[in-house]
Length: 101
Image (cartoon, helix red, strand yellow):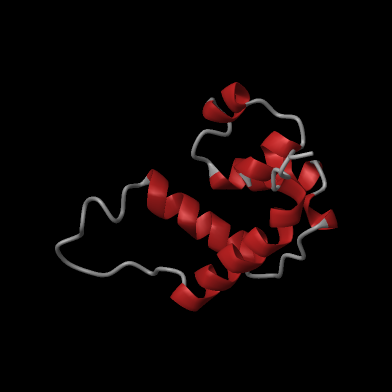
């Protein structure tokens, strides 16, 4: 999403600061505002998976394991679908073309 936002005119400095930095939901919302859906067809589960990933990262779930209990994590295949379709969709939009003449 950051590559899409950079290509859409946001600066790297803006993306390094709040509200964006590592907030996937803020990045997704801004990407939608700037037209990512013109190149990417998200499905009903994508926003939920972005929410879960955001929570997992922000609360450091994977860095600080729990002793008793379990986490309810998104399905790996759903995350693979999300990352794969997002990448394939925006790749042509953000790819830097070779400038050889």
